[in-house]
Length: 95
Image 1: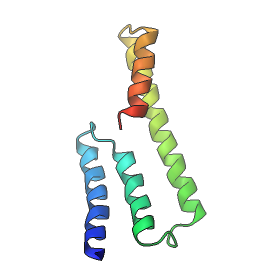
Image 2 (image 1 turned 180 degrees about the horizontal axis):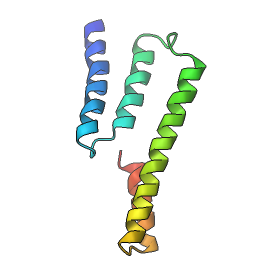
Image 3 (image 1 turned 45 degrees about the vertical axis):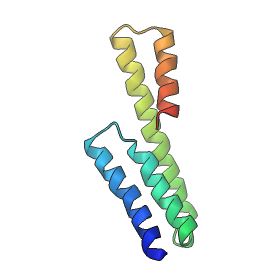
Image 4 (image 1 turned 180 degrees about the vertical axis):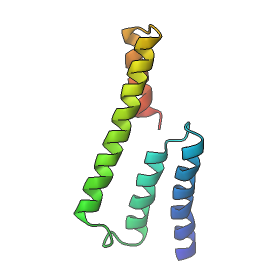
């Protein structure tokens, strides 16, 4: 069973790295999923509180960067407030 667990965890990280080339794939979500799955399937003992704080900060910064680039793109091309709301909802629900 351990081999299957390792394949699943490795698949999460491989999909995340593919997301570096194809930005349609939400890499951050798959990286966090890989760490969490590893913790649930094996142990969380290898992760310190500092690791989770840094991981949370990176995740928040990447989501904020996505939001800001969406906002700037919408404003630059003359989008409405509804377009801003739509992009925000898509950013949160899309991944």
